[in-house]
Image 1 (cartoon, one colour):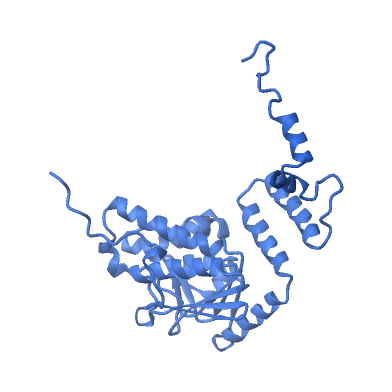
Image 2 (image 1 turned 120 degrees about the vertical axis):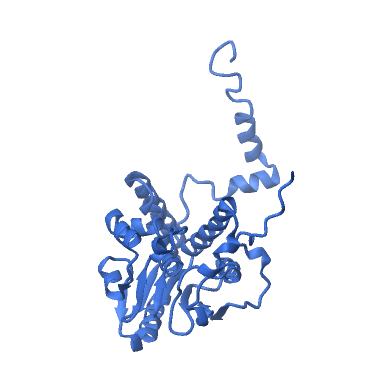
Length: 302
């Protein structure tokens, strides 16, 4: 007997979104984009619709060639209360839930891997998925009264897109267990003590602190910032020798973009021109290489 079609919400996707957004505000002011989670009546909980919109907005920012800094914040005096628990019955069966979490992980990865510098401006609550958003940002600046935690354990669920993975990498296994297994809500200052966030300021100074940070970031060589972000994020997940190789290549790229790009025994793109024109250089290289050692390593063939 055929199974009825699932009534579950489809996994998060940008493909179902046509701006304007219902639950986000996205603005650009020159090189600075501001992304505001905008469901203040429910502490900006991530609904099914908001999740689709957030992926869409992050992919728009990813594709921008003008945005250099992204500020992420919440409307109404709070950052984000995480997933909208009231909608979870609409997530479907175990397979459909895994598909949804795959979409959330894509969302967090897209945020983390932006070639822009990202700043989370945190006031009120950053719990569950809200805390996971901050962990995917490069900088976190919070008001003194902000609170954070991973309370999923008391709902009987587990985090899906950073609460166990990024958190462990940021503060270590033992403290990540404490945060997840107990489910407490912690003061902002403790997040700084654990190196989870960067800075806590008086609530009334939050906007000024974020603005000052953005000004400092915009004063930098933007290519250097992009390379450093890539190096730090990639190297953190690699062994020492691989991370050092990233550093070495970055040093070469830095020299190239600063003008020292001509290496004497490189062909200065002559190979590309040779392919395009099928000139003498191309003919020589291909004639030498086309049938070289194609008979195998032994005199009588393979």
